Length: 416
Ligand code: TYM
Image (spheres, rainbow, N blue to C red):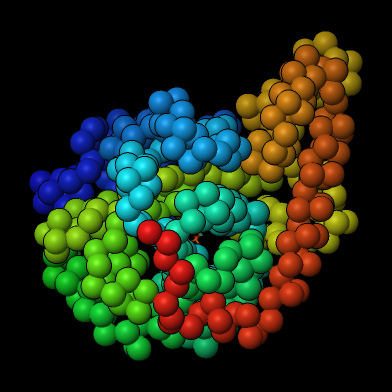
């Protein structure tokens, strides 16, 4: 249950009585936090409820229309389909863009395994689009320290996984002149301003508050307790003087909603430090192959499609493991039709098939029973195989030298 202190700490949370895992006393089902996403529902997390519990705002038609009007570009399918469904202060960011005032993007990855899965790609695909549309600098944090503290990983391995993951991130197509990628373990020791912001943040948040926000207990190591300040610090431009000088530049963070607890804390401390609160755009979760109730896990390769999978592995995984919303027999399926709300192949297509008309046709045909489960799975396989192969080709071109350039603290091209 939320303490009075926590209500103060997470000043953005207004509704319900949630703990920071997105649970409240009346709701036993969904549990959403940076380390776990759990739902009992076959259709996935109830995102409308989550918006209320977290106190964020819905990405509504008005915001979508304003996005298109101000950028002059059609909205990305992840935005127009409601996959990025929630935000904090996105109107403020659009105001800045309209007034030609600067802001930057910040996102990240916790390098816990060599191979990233398709779900990890979602915020990066969207961030790349945001970078192209707004033409702004981007900071990407690799929290190798977080993974060292939380997982059974040697420090050296966490550092090397950060480099491997950075290559996958670069392969998404980020502009080297506008993007700085850093690993906590390599960068922070060289940047006093970053460390100074960490300490400022640490001084604003009590142990009681982080316990409430992140669920830490008495036997958690002390590194975990202070870690949230490290993920918060890149939200403040003064952490990167070589990019922003002394200017206080506002920040927009695209991520899945599991990362929101970090940024509720950040938004609470920002005004006390004289900084802008970071704005956020939250995505929903790309589900495991077995369905929305299963967790994707690097230790079970059959729970997801990984960026290292071959075309054959993709085909086999989809055919064998993708949870089907179809009926038990062909006759029954033709008669009753399939259920797109729970069908994983259809859900995956909503993330990766860009053509709206084709997607709608598939939805109609599957729902009516005209399209069979095997045919729907084939649609997905045909969409995913080239996406993953092309990613692998681009990644093969990311040399150590390219990586080094992205990870070198330097001035970025900074339009306005
Ligand atoms: P990590 O490595 O768990 O996840 C990286 C990014 O992917 C998002 N994500 C997903 N998105 C859609 N569907 C999924 N199934 C899915 N699983 C993960 C995460 O929300 C995240 O955006 N602590 C962070 C690293 C980090 C960070 C940040 C993330 C540091 N600074 C700023 C976002 C913004 C982590 O371990 O992410």
